[in-house]
Length: 191
Image 1 (spheres, rainbow, N blue to C red):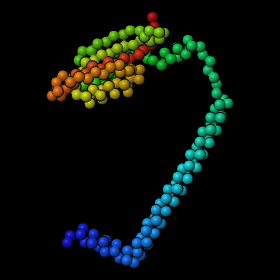
Image 2 (image 1 turned 30 degrees about the vertical axis):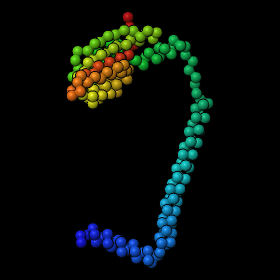
Image 3 (image 1 turned 60 degrees about the horizontal axis):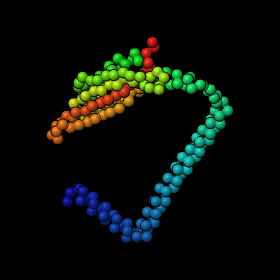
């Protein structure tokens, strides 16, 4: 017999000895005592967490009450609000630097970019925003294209993904033909 069989045989003999000495009711009682101890430990832990959460909620209520009395209401006209909103966007002069970010993200994701289409036009009704459309055809597997798009969107918060079209030219083809369309938003150039 190997050691595992010897250990299993010894445990089996010990189990029979305990059952003969204590009986089935004794084993059941010991199991119930163990379950009660575990339940008590969880109950005390849950009680402590509930007390901590109550104290944190009370502190938050106190802070809200304090802020409510000192809150200053900003009274701005719609034109001032629009101007403030537009200030969140970068100036149009940053478009060249943003293209460098797009190309660097493509290089980092090992995506070769073909010749793209670029166009700039004003956003109607925005009062001074421009949209810069960047359309890039890509032939690559899906994972690198996905990494490229994610990197661009993470690095350029003023960019949006307008379209991601993925086609497989043949069922056995390893590379996909993709079309990635980003739109970047800028403040108009000062004339």
